[in-house]
Length: 260
Ligand code: IPD
Ligand code: CA
Ligand code: CA
Ligand code: CA
Image (spheres, rainbow, N blue to C red):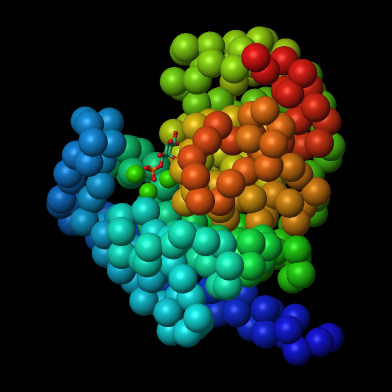
């Protein structure tokens, strides 16, 4: 075991601890009245817990990595303009609408990239208490237990994770994608749904996403032999938004052939 790998293993353990502590903070604040604000519309919410959890995660990452450049959804990080160096991408609460209206089906996510290379990723489905963690060097675990790569199922042989706007508007021929699959599942949290792809519960997931919605998922997915690309099959750009597809290799081929 080389030094770099030993350091990554240690960082991976430390980050899992940070995520678990963050979860207890979030749970303890959920019993208390939330402060909810609209960002750009009544469907785009942010709460005091998004802010406090982002504060906590950004602080902890800075303590673990003095060279961290942090891109965080609610603005507590840095102005990140390049993927060079150590880049951490943070979504403190993914699925804020669910958090506010369901107190369920939301996640926290952190992705770590070194010179653009997917290195470590964390998706924590808070209420299910499922922490997906790891990366290509250290392997992927679910709550500390090694997670096996999901079977390479075809689109026709599995459920497909959709986003409501894409499906309703039949963007990218989404209705045919769904009709080809065993059925659509729509949950309102990219983190929870990407977790389901990692676990083999969905053969794929397609949604319009921003970097913090897919950064952690990309690390974990690629480590498990899954693929994440833009909907036209080109590589995702970690610093911009786009329609992002994460899927098994076979389901990806099927989806790309249907997409218009
Ligand atoms: C949102 C959720 C949702 C997706 C949106 C995201 P947020 O994240 O992941 O499922 O459809 O595009 O913005 O804002 O709750 O962190
Ligand atoms: Ca948001
Ligand atoms: Ca998000
Ligand atoms: Ca968020």
